[in-house]
Image 1 (cartoon, rainbow, N blue to C red):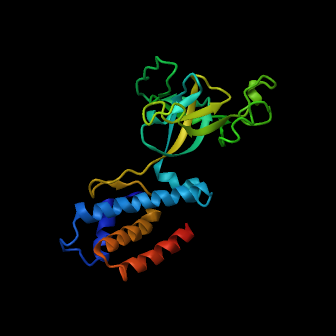
Image 2 (cartoon, rainbow, N blue to C red):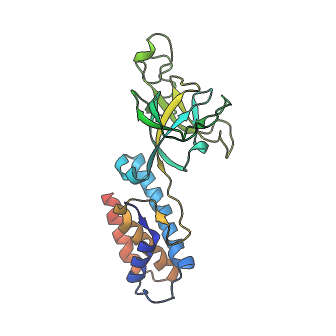
Image 3 (tube, rainbow, N blue to C red):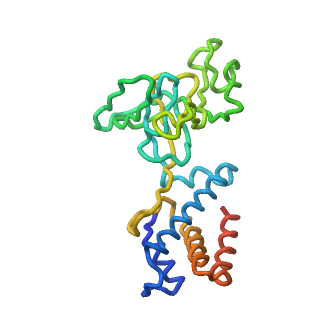
Length: 252
């Protein structure tokens, strides 16, 4: 389960022997320290996940799925997701879905992709293999490769693939800034995307921290490290938490 910023702040105050003191302020010390620790941990997780040192189970509590309609280029824009995307965990083409009672959103423009919040994912027989940019063209002419979109085999035998989000139009924001492409083409068709929500910065201590409880100690150590650095005490708190963090990174 996730936890609140308040619980982390209370532990920091205890470690600093400042439970009933106003020496450290929430707005100037605790909240900035917690946000700095979250940014740091996000970078660590990105590196560890990219090197296959941690699995998808790390993202369990911040994982979501959604059904989308692709555009005419068989792409889905990250800008239309209901949350900011940290990482794409899986893509499945042509899913079986169920209605959830929400009204169907209008989808008038076939050059745009849409988030279909009236549908939930049930199943799919077409899990997409993630392909790197360098290997994306390999499947164009090879019927045995995922992503083949030719006519040498029947559609039922084709294997689907997807390309990591790419900026195709050199724009910094908007619905075409980052797009996932699926092949064989699912032009204006349905796909399900599973993703991890990017942790949001906290603005108040009542906010939930979008990390699993298993990393509470790691965030605590780094936030304590940050406060120790600010107060100029780099011989006690800083050195101890640095050693702890290094040990925890090794375990992670």
